[in-house]
Length: 172
Image (cartoon, rainbow, N blue to C red; front, side, top):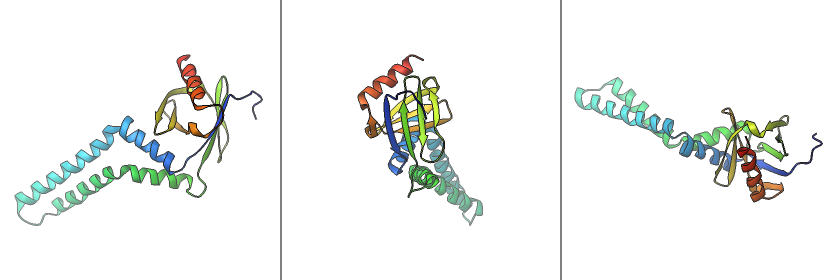
């Protein structure tokens, strides 16, 4: 346990709503190209299958495989958000979702998950903070992101927390 007084405290439940916001942030704002590439490949595959079917004029196994593969790619890219949210929710458990407690100290952030050991992170390690759909996403290096629900603050206010974090990130 840390003996320093913390300035802000929040608890975020990693439920489907939090994971949906994370997935949408990643697919709609940060990583658009992979999803568009899969969708484009699906349409290209369907076009190739149609070309084979209309030029050969007989049953073609390759064309059928291309049709199935193209449709699978399009369905996956169209429902990627749903699939990813379901996978993340299943990984942490729907009945007992992960709960992270965030405590903001003057020189570091302490994250204590409900399932595991607490971790101290220097503000210098935070590469960026994004605000999306009512959550703050704390990106630590290029390796991980933490979801923080500012409305769940038990100590401090959302406005003061944002000011504090902006000051800490500007001081890096």
